[in-house]
Length: 168
Image 1: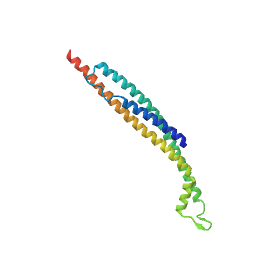
Image 2: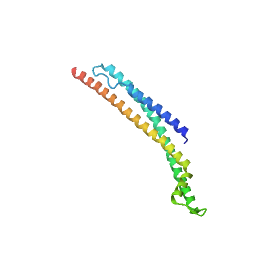
Image 3: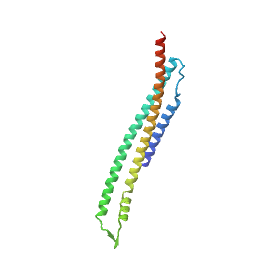
Image 4: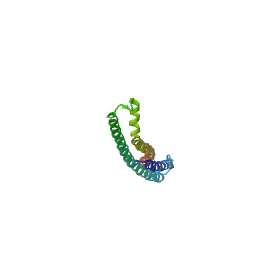
């Protein structure tokens, strides 16, 4: 996974999160309980459509997150494999070079330099995965908030229906 791909993923995720935030906070927190039932029902329809759009955004983010997690897992597996190969190659080499003893730290540094590219790829893949995890959590919270508003309005509508049935 290249840095450019991660930047594209981050840009996509940022735009989806921005849209989700806009959807959530463009919805009024609550309709006036004294409003008529048709007004409240209309608010319920609008909130339901907003929730549907949030669901759609969440599914997109979860799909990107799944791909990012698979990439991160693959990159980390390749890093471990490269580390093992580099360490094996280093351990099979002599501990003296040019008549000088090579310390364990120097050997570890040599292994780290050998797998530097794999470490970079694993870090980039992990960054993409973490970005997607964070976005999914934000969108889930926004969805819960909006659904709570829908439930509150629905409760008011039901209580009005109950009151009107008692008045008969």
